[in-house]
Length: 63
Image 1 (cartoon, rainbow, N blue to C red):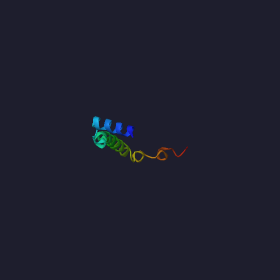
Image 2 (cartoon, one colour; image 1 turned 180 degrees about the horizontal axis):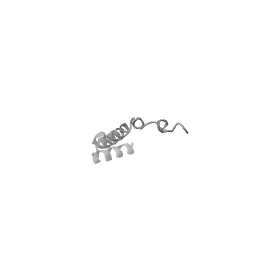
Image 3 (spheres, rainbow, N blue to C red; image 1 turned 120 degrees about the horizontal axis):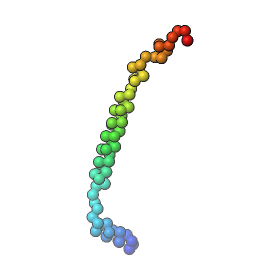
Image 4 (cartoon, one colour; image 1 turned 135 degrees about the horizontal axis):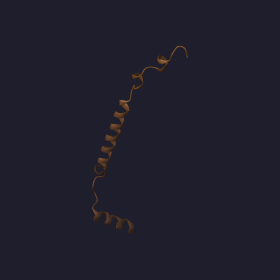
């Protein structure tokens, strides 16, 4: 019981009652921005292969 009362008095003295969610919010925003940019980069590479002619079309018929 002494440990519990000592721990309670230490917590009461430090006063650290801030919201943990608000302290970590910038990390989530940065992570969301990084994933959004990565998603845009991936989306920009869609259908790149369709822009080029098929190699079979360039081949000579004698080969």
